Image 1 (spheres, each protein chain N blue to C red):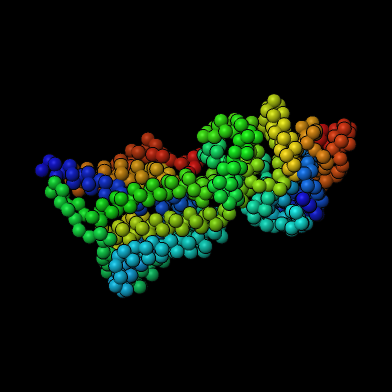
Image 2: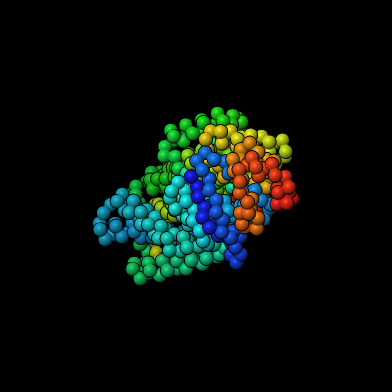
Length: 294
Length: 233
């Protein structure tokens, strides 16, 4: 019994942590690289999920086909978001407000469109890897293991990409000193597009992989958006490492509180932790603040 | 190499340059001298596309590059080392240098260029792993020069390389620029101190209130102390 509780808490925590990290990764990347707080991140998340759902339910293809389709659709949508709403205001004084309003508006529009196209019922996106095993009386789902692996792998890939590749370094250069970047012949506007598209693809991965846990309806983007925002602020807006650590700290904390103090304490506990955290370190765990950039 | 014809440029509501004509020949060192606030920086920024051009033309190696985007101009071989260095603060010395060679096609090519800059400035290799924002003023200036050299430049524009530096360091920096020029590089340098540029200037322009008021061989103009006194104070 004692053992079961511990295994349950650890498994739940690592799974929650990976889920949080996966949702926050794209959001924190866009903020860190191009100072875009993309409030349409949750909308892009459900676009990926709905695209995968459509491939499975209407085209009767397997989820293995639906996953890349969902990711691509989300990335394309993000690229469109860049072309229509971000690109025109790059380098202009109203960038922050214009992009906040545009992304909020866009996420409302996406929910409405999803309602019209797919109706308000809950849809079920099948897991990529079905099945589960029982360890010490706790059910370990294969999809859960996949989410953990995918989350860790994507964090590693994004980190390596930013640190070692020419394109990744150009993204950091643009984030740190835009004018100098253009003097190094880096196309600044295109770099914004690249970042936002990658961020959208990451939201799409999260959408397809996490929908089997959350179900899918037109307002399903809201909770992941808020959670991603909380994780990102806790870890420090713009910090990739921060999002990873914050995801696991919050996930494990939530899971342990849930298992040992009861479900009712989980949410208040998490918010208490966040409030204390923000009093002690207002910029988050690895806050990028005003001085430090990607 | 570089030809500027009737260039007018400025910022919202105020024109700073009112029709400037200037040329820089192949391998030539040209210095624009003038007091602060008379348009030296605006001139360089207009040439590189950072300030919008209102009238006139900028021609690089026979090609009209007026109103091109800064990154396209840079890719064309015009390298601008801006005032205040504008390094990438949270990147290492090595990463800053590599960004200078962004237009270089392959990693092998970028590493070759890195080796060449390290040979010229061995100090940069010693500090390769240090973050740019932890460097001193003189070190930053040297990194900015090195980063400029990483591009395959046909001409380098350098904006006031002595700004904010101690005299000893300033001397070092100008010695470095002389080395770059001796390597055959065409240079356009903006400065406010005639003493700094002796030995690297072939020709000098005097810039006053957005207009080039005098032009001549460095040997003549830089000797004319009365003239320099009246312009630079």
